[in-house]
Amino acid sequence: MEAQLCGGDEVMVVGGANSAGQAAVFLSKTATRVHMLVRSSGLADTMSRYLIRRIQESGTIVVRTGAEIVGLDGDTHLECVRIRDNGTGAIETRTIRHVFFMTGAVPNTAWLRNCVAVDEKGFVKTGPGLTRDELLAARWPLPRAPHLLETTLPGVFAVGDVRGGSVKRVASAVGEGSIAISFVHQVLAES
Image (tube, rainbow, N blue to C red; front, side, top):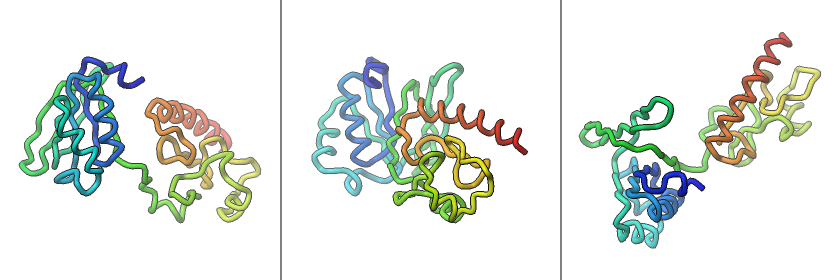
């Protein structure tokens, strides 16, 4: 679906592991140019040799190592991306309307482990995904069950990729954010 939406355009894939490489190769079939942005100095430590070879052989994929996004600009949609070369500090602006973030499936939630329930992979558990034992361990203080996106800490919600069971899509995360806001209003009204 994404490949059809950005066919004929320049696109950017952020990440340097196999999922980013696979996305770049896939998108290179329809995009005019695929810019791969990698923070590290290369792909050899994080990507299979076979995939690296396919990227190198592609005339459509450009790999930029030691670089990262420092800005996304546009009015009603993404229009351009600002990229910093971490070696020189130089910032370049590219006209790109489609960015795919393939920066890993490991949630950065270690700091939350003593605050809210997380699953064995570190994803935040919410709503119906919480067990009775987890609510007891967290000393859930309210007579009601947690709302759909609510964590084991009343009034604290999790949405998007960090949430256990999410579909790992931006559109879904935006929708979950909208739902969470309505629950925030309900929680505030309960106070």
